[in-house]
Image (cartoon, rainbow, N blue to C red; front, top):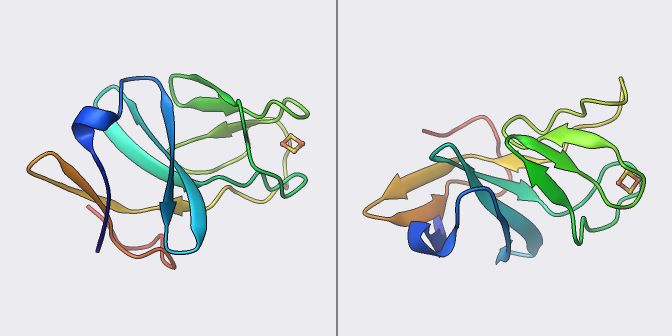
Amino acid sequence: MELIASTADIPEGELIESRAGDKEILIGCVDGQYFALEDVCPHAWVRFGFAQLDKTTLTCPWHGLQFNVLTGECLSWEGMPEITTFPLTIEDGQIFLNDPESKDEGS
Ligand code: FES
C-alpha cells in the first residue's frame, strides 16, 4: 500500500491532485466515501485539469463528458472506456492506495 493523503487534506466534494508511483491521480470524498482515480480523461487522454465534481459525477472540462468517480464509468457516452479507479484503505485518518495496477482489491 502507498500513503497518498490524509483525510484531513480532502474536503468533502472537492478534488485534490496527487501522485501514486508514476501516475497523476485525483483524490476526493463524496458523502464520506473517499475515492482515487487516474487524472486522465479516456476521451482524449489528457488530464482533467479544472474538472468539476457534483456529488459522484465528474464533468470533464474539455468536452463535457461525465463520469462516475466511484466506478470510473462514463455516464454520457456509451462505450467510452472507464477512468481508472484505485482501491483505497483508510486507517487512522490516512488514505492508502492498495495497488496502483489493480482495481479489483480494496476495502
Ligand atoms: S477530453 Fe475529456 S471529454 Fe474530451
